[in-house]
Image 1: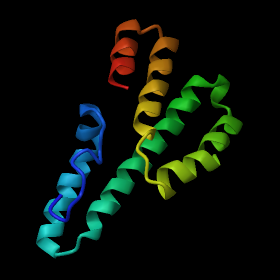
Image 2 (image 1 turned 180 degrees about the vertical axis):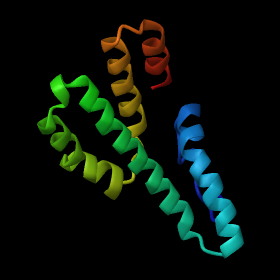
Image 3 (image 1 turned 90 degrees about the vertical axis):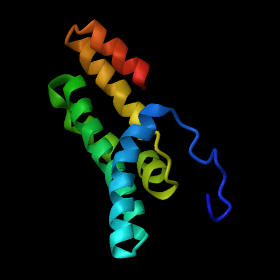
Length: 120
């Protein structure tokens, strides 16, 4: 913002701020201590990677017998690779919450499913 950035450059809800904000705060503190600003981007990317790994586990739980093909489609999808890592979008979080909703529905947990869907 000090360099003229737009205040609404991250127009997402509070769940996004909490999830991505934790790593960014740690990275900001480390950046102040080390003088390197690259850590914020690294921690932001690590948060995205953690969400993608979580999504893979959720897809494994939803598919029949943990289908390896489904995992490969998620992991090697050009859309996932481009959107998350090249373009830098953070839509992996609502998708992960949606997958967690499906897992909760599969287990018959209606209230947690509704909460997860609402957070997504």
